[in-house]
Length: 296
Image (cartoon, rainbow, N blue to C red):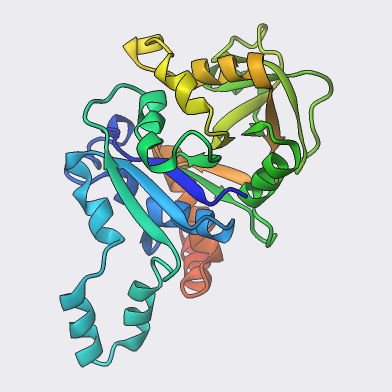
């Protein structure tokens, strides 16, 4: 059973500029918490107990967020702000470990994943979660990440989480080619191949890879032998194609919805979705939306 997750957080976040100039893009807030906290909560809910941050010297704010802030906690305790204190102490459950390792150079997603090799080793499977993508499964209690990890356990094959996207947007994504029929939501099926950002006429399906992976430890040896690809970077997609040709790779079709918080409109949509559902601010936020909508 997969218990380790890799979160590549070393990127410069250029899609989020100027917001990400002075703070990590992963620390940009959705309602009352940073994006990366939602991703860590997603991992923990799926049974992950070791969170490996592949980070950069400019991303200390991420590590600080998941660390204990003794002075702040003492101040809240003294002032009797117990609800706020409890929210701080629950950011990381006691049985979850946050582990950091540096990616010294921006050499691609494949290289970022490879940086976690000394911590995970070549014999243990793990999951990769891209921290600028939120996966919302409400109102379901079983998350798509949990379903994908179960599919890995059942099949022993690497899993790529995919989402159906409009055909006129396939050129924005990595698109998978199923061997047979497109899997139903909540199910997985073997892949014939993957195509990076194809034109609509060349796309084999409209199932896009959305930044969640379940991988065997053997991917590390493949990544180590993968030459630089597009952009002169080590591409995880190239390593996955090698893995597919040797061991097979499957696509897990998600049930929920994703929000690309690395894009301004995706970020705004995430605020609307999570704000409307927030247990404390949801009612007031819906009233605000109605007020501004009527104002138009």
